[in-house]
Length: 321
Ligand SMILES: C[S@@+](CC[C@H](N)C(=O)[O-])C[C@H]1O[C@@H](n2cnc3c(N)ncnc32)[C@H](O)[C@@H]1O
Image (cartoon, rainbow, N blue to C red):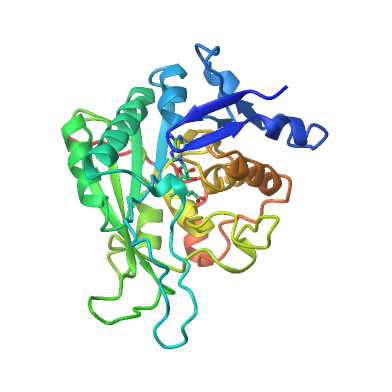
């Protein structure tokens, strides 16, 4: 039996749980249905929920998660025509997915407002939230966050070492994304911030709020059955590792309401955190299942032994205000 649920710009079925019944990850996915009125934390812990985040968030218990990573649609507004590289005349693989299309800024803003309002309800008073986007939408998102009541702590600039080349030379090469790091409101206290990790990851002696790392590529990039990228905007494991190590403790619950290829939960599990992921597209959820069926190669290796020693067992809380 196949349950069909219509959502904004997407139609999905519960074929995921049918197709991989015998797989070791068969209990990883929950399919949300209109008949499901509430979802306890126990029910959604370490699960991927196939469903519309705007609906699923309303069913989750309030004040239940410690940290949220949100990588929403960018609303890139690419022109309809295929972009060509001017020198070699091959196609540029932009983000032209249905999930990134909105009729107008108003429609996009409404989606972001609803999503971030839903997220805020399920955040514990001491929880932190990370929202990532490019210049196309980060300024709108920032305004909406402040309007809703979030309190900004920082932004972190992700400087990509392998950005898309600047084809036409009519503006700066776009090699950055911005992560907003915030708490639920101005009164939030005792949120988790690991300053040693922050210093380790940031640039320069002061450990500034700039992270230099490449886009997700090579073996890490998930492929679909057609051999092409499964997800056009899969985030690098290293990025999520930095988010999780700087702002959570082992055992914390990390929510990703727009999970894509599931990078957040994948890294959370590897670092002994718990996760809740929501994704509307069944194809991506199937990809997450495959991803979780394999060993997790995420470690804190790659950082200096001095730093590793310094971070061992480190769990300091800081307060604001
Ligand atoms: C920018 S991508 C996230 C990529 C992800 N961080 C990763 O590493 O793969 C945004 C995702 O939001 C999903 N999405 C869009 N609208 C949604 C909704 N209403 N509920 C749940 N997921 C949604 C899209 O299907 C897409 O996979």
